[in-house]
Image (cartoon, rainbow, N blue to C red; front, side, top):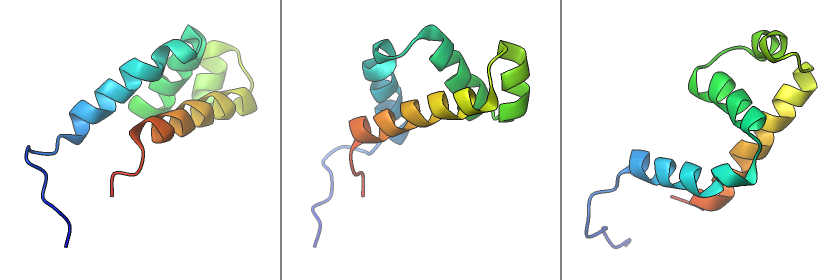
Length: 77
């Protein structure tokens, strides 16, 4: 049986904290890519045209930040 946490679990707070902790590891351009594709839900091809970057560069930046955030958050299950 798993122990219940003593305080309410706030995934939004944890996510914001993880973002703050890893943000400095990436360029501002990478964060723009992340925000446009993940937060705003804009298609890779559109962000690619907006920023003048190849679609593979967009996917790579997004993937690197998501991977790093997963590492920072750890296993929440």
